[in-house]
Image (cartoon, rainbow, N blue to C red; front, side, top):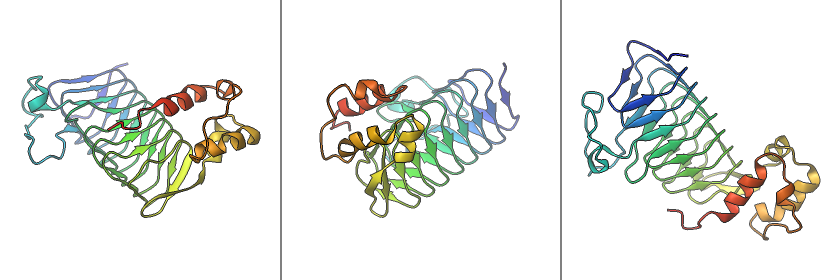
Length: 243
């Protein structure tokens, strides 16, 4: 299906759109950017403007085609498919890597994804969430209204961050973090149960999720349902000095 782009929207040179996307009024998308299929991008969204760095150039990308030189044009933005990007969301281009948003995410009004952020699939970023640069938000994470992430923070898969929280350190997989500064208060049992885990399995994983013990042996991880096994293994194998 063809894209539906409002006549007041600005699509800059170097922007690649897939199919069946909706782009609302007064939205500005600046290249280099690549956007997948079936995204709903609301009014007054900005995607691909320069990262907030005093020393970097700020070209008028909506007027001039990018030269393809990352030192001058930035590393751009890549967005997957089937996302809902609500009004006033902003996504900055990368400075040393591509700012990347996965698929099936819901980005609520006024949320901000800063330069060089990596965001996985199926995330929920609530209204007025602000991320610093270089953050990594894993699949299925849920950031509550008004949460603030310090630059280079990592939020694990399936983790929940409470509204108004200030996150200054890593939030582990399938944990719940709240407060200022944010602290882990428990395990996201609801999120795990929705992924098909029973109480016994959640209890067995509990010490690992809380960072107290290694992953249980005996093949438990391989028996996890769906893509959860792959996600847990990827989180366990991640480089601890990611940034």
